Amino acid sequence: MKQSFSITIFSFLILAFTACNNNSSMNNNTKDSAAADRSTSSSVQIPSAENFQTTIDGKQTNLYVLKNGNMQVAVTNYGARIVSIIVPDKNGNPTDVAVGYDNVADYGKGGDTYFGAVVGRYGNRIAKGKFKLDGKEYTLAVNNGANSLHGGKTGYSRVVWDAQQPNDSSVVLTYLSKDGEEGYPGNLNVKVTYTVLSNQQLKINYEATTDKSTVLNLTNHTYFNLNGQSSGTINDHLFMINASTFTPVDSTLIPTGKLETVKGTPFDFSTAKTLAATVDDSSNQQIKFGHGYDHNFVLNTKDNLKEKAAEVTGNESGIVMDVYTDQPGLQFYGGNFMDGSHTLKNGKKDDHRTAFCMETQHYPDSPNQPNFPSTTLKPGQQYQTTTLYAFSAK
Ligand code: GAL
Image (cartoon, rainbow, N blue to C red; front, side, top):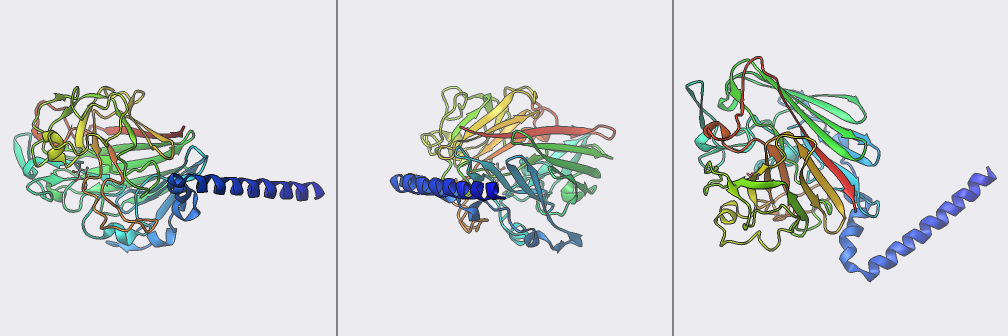
């Protein structure tokens, strides 16, 4: 008893000393105000589950919290969305690196940004919302100028998935996408499993089967800011993308069908660099078309889940995110359409380029591009892909 009392006093003194020390170093260095922000409990809390409990289209929505060691991930079954990803920064401060809302209603409002969502049936664009499969032409819902984007008007990001949480560190989400939904052929049974592994890795496993030939391209659309959600621009993060070529696009962001070398262009991320110097280089037509970075990179990893596809470092937090995937491409989107019109979990706005997405995927418009790897799934085949986001700090 006496011993535990003195331990308590001792711990208190250590805490008080640490707090004073933190305060003085913060005062000395105002640049660290973002770090201070990250360490306040309000910016790192998982939103309340109650804010996610409602009925949409007759189905119950909820918030599922996954934990393993120092990492926590919150997922809602509305759109199979990742709401929060909390990992320690270089000082051990818990930091929420995923952009999201603190309630399910905001996810359902107009102007979908796809925050945290699983996008499908086809992630990214299909030109003019049309493709041919087995000699038959299909017409999709068009929702992005003349093109179909991220599955169409509703896609998988604005529907309620069925959810089961088998243990503390994972959640399994399933959705039946019916034959003809958004114009796609075949009843597609989709299953997405999020698992927080030890060593601060988030594993996303996608599975699907169909009863008619169809096309699909499932990905996750989490917006990351490795200095912490809405802590400012991501232009000074360090980005490495393991790709020697990318798929240039036309002005509507549909690939031309060519693979172009990144060498000597703003698209060369083979050694880590920031975006600041090149993101507004309007002398480059591709940067102009993308309003910055919004392009599919052809990964050198050759579908090998063990080789690193990308590595991003938060310049203030020291948080590093490594991306591993068995997919052939990665859409690097630099938050160019973020415009401050949404209020996020911590009460701040989703300002321009304050987050980035690393959407592991097949190349955009593959159903219309004979030279791109196939995105067709036939009855009897099993679609199975995995992506890992691995976090550390330095
Ligand atoms: C990205 C896409 C962007 C934009 C964004 C959502 O996946 O590449 O062009 O549509 O989603 O705002």
